[in-house]
Image (cartoon, rainbow, N blue to C red; front, side, top):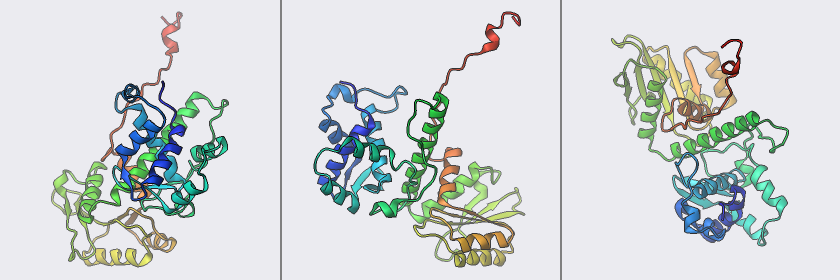
Length: 310
């Protein structure tokens, strides 16, 4: 048999997670959902065209993405899936096989939900609207559909990055931030970016030397937070910069900034705030902790067939 589409993995995956409320390894969930759908060992060997992953694992992963966006499941850490309280209630309220309407809602109804790094416990807590993907349409051109797919892949990668960042140690997060800034072109070499975080860091987690003699520096604060960064934290960072007689500072967080914090950043010179969404986007752009797949899209070269030019 052919491997079912990812939407067909949603219900068996939810049922399996509901039967194991303490959470399971993703690799077990992949196989249990596949077994529930009747896949054979031969079916499980079929790879994506890129050869990077078995198709059934890829589709189970996308099914779990839909459950997370609906607030019904979570990824407390890499490679580990756990049903949320809302997911437990949902499974009990829908004990019979999902109707076509319910399956479609879970598949497409939450694609505009931006996943947070924190683990949601209810659909209301997980909802943070971003760009909403339209339903597939025969009126959409292949290029339009490809663009929508690429945007969704980027959002899924960004959400996974934020989940991973939420679970690294503060010291490693500071190192990641400095690695990213170096990938972005700051510092002549990686040695020009120094991590100074610690209990006595004076509000500074990293220092970047923009020139070889270290005459011009950028100071960095990195916060691996769940709640938004407020104005007091930015004011404290600004004070730390003043204490170093510094003119440039970058404040990076896995969460976001309050309106008051952003207003303060705009009212002073030299502070650049970077929230979790922009952090993940920059990591994807700079391919830090991310690998990019090359997609060859054929396009006819009309000039080649122009006999008059030839």
